[in-house]
Length: 183
Image 1 (tube, rainbow, N blue to C red):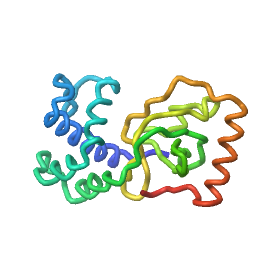
Image 2 (cartoon, rainbow, N blue to C red):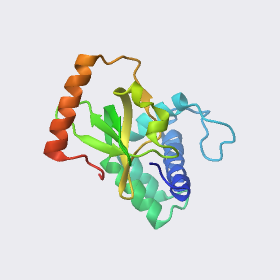
Image 3 (cartoon, one colour):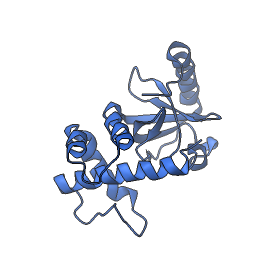
């Protein structure tokens, strides 16, 4: 599952706007232009800007207060909800019918049902490549959980013993908390 066309446009309007604002404020990648970009953007160029955004919680409120891109009320509500993001390292454990299960890699982490932005996560990462360790931020989008458009996989293989342990941990988390599908 992934966002519909209108929500995809809305997400990228908000996302590119806040990234552009962050980049201008902290001058992270001076040559990077996201709004109105005419050619594909290298995700590795965006990561430092994304990291600066998530390191400075106040930037979202500053952006909303100045509202340089004239976000409407719904867009402001969505952006404001991103302050409840969960950043870090996650294991993509499995793909379900409507979402993919991300387990926070930190001790005491939980399992989250995450959908894709413009394509299902299952189309990005074949089930035979799971579990997969990735760096990202999970963010709310309306009544769903998406990621911040940057899934940075680690180049490592997870063996069968670890896979078995992860499946046991997933089952325990699922029984205790369920799969969390809203933030």
